[in-house]
Length: 108
Image 1 (cartoon, helix red, strand yellow):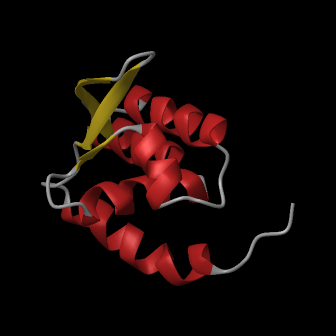
Image 2 (tube, rainbow, N blue to C red):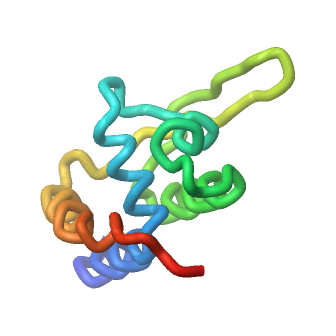
């Protein structure tokens, strides 16, 4: 991957507050993994599950998170994701820099 492609991937992948919040949430979990359902229930309670699931798929398409397995219950099979940017300090720095801005209430 060319350096410009990587920068573009990071910019596009991190260009939404929900995607940045998902990455932060994954990094804050002891095992580093979560399904969109568990993220919506615990870390992003103010976001609808459909939005969390959508943004998780977008992060996966930009290769910022990856599918690591599935959780099953009696009715559903849920995708479980983990961050793929643990080794990219610039991404973690960007997340830290944007954290205060992302914490502000949003108007819809």
